[in-house]
Image (tube, rainbow, N blue to C red; front, side, top):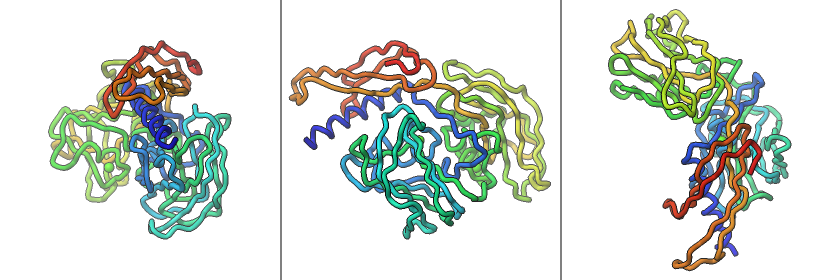
Length: 386
Ligand SMILES: [Ca+2]
Ligand SMILES: [Ca+2]
């Protein structure tokens, strides 16, 4: 029985991986409240993880990507490192919005050193229900913590611990890298590319949430492109330099471009213009309002009066995730149920669009140990259709 269950799980994971490969993995709207999720984009780790569902999925801001513990092993834990001490008083725990209801028995623990943990919320059964956006909010007496851990000891919906997002709220310093309060920074720790780089000042320095690390290009023009993963309704882009007194005034000429997720090319969102930074005089931030629905945002730099290349300590994209499709596997069977190596295996599956926008026609692949073993066409599906 045990072996059979694990085989089932492996193939389900492979089908999900195939769906991700065709580019339909969505992102999810963030809470609209002014509260800042202190865990967003921070590093995470777990006691164990199913290979395709790593711990980092609990802080990537997407409710559809999730961490999963090893099959059949409880308890399991996942934790976030907030990067410094904060006063926390609530966590919000999420599973993908389209999933069926389930109960997980879990506790919330906190630590300032990552080794000695105290209980913030005692172990108890928590219900994740799609009627409640598969979100569980747990308040507790405010405590000073740097590490917040969730330990799961049972799951009624799957034979492993599961969590999409581990959000932490409290009274913590929002920090210099945090976005304006009227929207979430969608760019933090997303894939980012530059057309050129000087020395070790790589593109990833521009969205690592640190004002002391920066990207610098080699000459002009130079481009810096962040990939949000799916369409978002964008309000503004924010370009920051290190606020340190050592950074004197400089003017950079910047154009902002965007690519809608189905488009092949970029369109200009804001024509080239000169923007002045004076970190030593307290002005290290430039905000450029833009509007529209885009998946990739690019900055093109044409000059910098303070250097031989473009310089960006942090590149933020402010906005909210747009409606997107979300194809999920809701049923999976195959025959014969216990095939030999020479049997032809027929796989039947049901795909549901659990997202908030229509899904275009696509292809579902069945993979075995990473190799595609079979494919079938999938018709266009309206939101909610199977
Ligand atoms: Ca996630
Ligand atoms: Ca940085």
